[in-house]
Image (tube, rainbow, N blue to C red; front, top):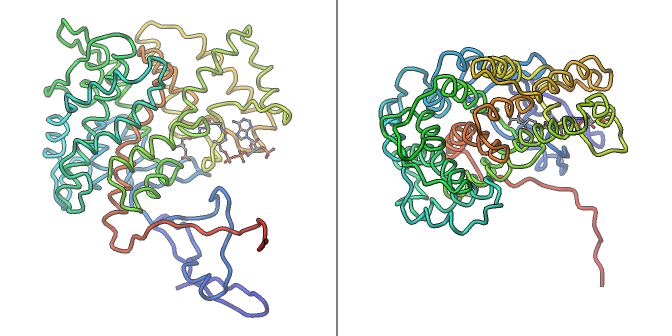
Length: 423
Ligand code: SDX
């Protein structure tokens, strides 16, 4: 076992170095405070690993993203979202995992449990029409715990039942919040439809007609949900691990992830990108002015959808989404001036020293809103769409943590710089 040496006050300490399956290396400092009386300090956790995980691998320098070893480029082309959810949570693609629930059981549970309790429908009446859909989603997911027979489940079977039911119901809540905000009748889920088609049915069907599948919309949404499905220890997934480590129930834990995702530095960026592109369009399309503004340290304007803590290369998801956006607009015979502005911003930024030197590239949020717009999804629902995609990832990380016999409550330390003893 390789070791790292630390010399403090002329005393030498050794700490084991652990290496992951993709040769990532970490200094294991679990004994640091006990042996040295010191802690580490790393605001924003840019250098700190919170856990060991088998779920997702990112190489930020090379722009690589794999779920359980499968590249997202092939999954987004060849898999169904429900299969990718099973892969992330149970570790197997197109075959049954060893522990507990088969793929068929998983999919059947999701199809059979898409309804929410009828009493929950009344909750939507309590929200003002101006309520943000993320506020509705996080509240309703917490409320689901009140309707679950065993929200605090610790046995494997109940854990897996809750996981499937949550996956089934979150898309229903999302669709209902859209219908309610547009004064439309709720559309009940249809057990015969796939995850993606069921959501589109509940969102856009005319309550007096059969659901008419549009393969362009189905394929585009399937791709987007897969590309958003997991991203290792991002802010919202780390929040899920943090909240789940107190053994708060699954619903409360996922609701905390939804809230963390809402921020414009994180999942809220997809809404902020479209609002930024619209602002530039309304300002005569002068995108060069906004590139200069993004570089101006005296302005708090940022090029939304650009930059990433981990990717110091083009976000592989952005490449796939950019191509898909062009394909969807062509197929739907739509022309979106905001896509042209986005392309122009990208072209300038990728050749501008400010962005090049800071390794700022388009991230997952830069082009995704173009597709959501083309599908008729309102801008304020874009982050809800991100949450629908990310839900399997949150569930996978929560399950991995909750089933780990060594997992403890997460409780970081601090360095106190306030008043010393007074009075
Ligand atoms: C997601 O972590 C994940 O994996 C997240 C995610 C996932 O799938 O879960 O990938 C999803 O959240 C994607 C990111 C979406 N957010 C945005 O698009 C918002 C715009 N981007 C930034 O706010 C920023 O880039 C972050 C939040 C994404 C990353 O922030 P960091 O790593 O803390 O970087 P930083 O703020 O310290 O910036 C480093 C430098 C600074 O300049 P200097 O102080 O060196 O002069 O780069 C500059 C920043 O000012 N910078 C930007 C910029 N992003 C960083 N300048 C202009 N525009 C930007 N977008």
